[in-house]
Image (cartoon, rainbow, N blue to C red; front, side, top):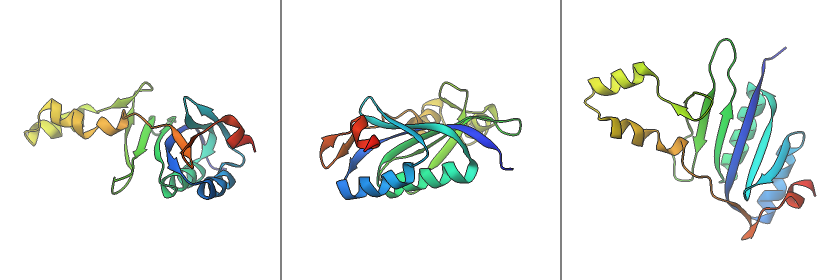
Length: 146
């Protein structure tokens, strides 16, 4: 049996009503609600399940942050994608936010990068997710439950 992980998605941005209807099909079976105007999805899922939903949110053009709990083999991670990024990025998490491992800091120092440069490279992991707008209208729980 595949391992399951606790996962939380936060997504926002602009989406058409038609694209939203298509996305709702992919949310079936997930615990989803509106939180601060954003789509919030939390549940336990296998690696392939959460990667699939992450891909669907990106394909819909939404900004998305995904936080995955760790297990005995790997620690918690944060995955992020915002419109304009070539591909999603991931980093380790300390359970509160992005964590930059000491080895990565040593590597950056060897490359003559300043701490400000390293922090800037990780800034999108803390970047604010915009509210989700469906045809210009703010998301409400009824949009998810309908």
